[in-house]
Length: 219
Ligand SMILES: [Zn+2]
Ligand SMILES: [Zn+2]
Image: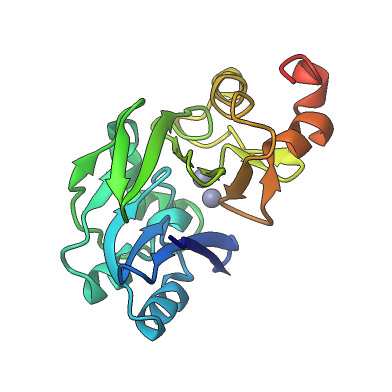
């Protein structure tokens, strides 16, 4: 069984849109479709993959603005979001205005995510962990069979998510990282919403935001 994971960065925020693909099944899942969604769709088309679902780590503009493009190509792909971010999702026009940008109209959410839920997509287990702090309804997606977690804007290579946007909270973010990122195996690949991928162990040892708090304690 082969799972492919491709990242496509685009837009003013260089947000990463992820395409999880199973060529043996002709299926794919899109995570956080942003400005690079068309590139992900092109890859899916070239490889004969049908997008079966859209998973959202959170509802900031840069992580959702590609939803209309994905839905235009795959009208039946259900959109999954934690209800804690519905307010942000519904206010995407206001989010865009705050950055002097325009946002597309978004279709309604189809499925609400909750902490501890195990999704079954692409014949894979995908575990949902609630990780608020950067956004009030932020989640990460952990693929325990593959040693991979898609962590959105919770933690980055050498950094952490900003907490100054509406619904953000610094203490809550650090508690999310401690409880739901640093408890993953060290070798777990972290696929982040911006920038390059990293690992749990690398961030535990070297992330300047985390080392003073948690360095070594959880190793
Ligand atoms: Zn964000
Ligand atoms: Zn982002």
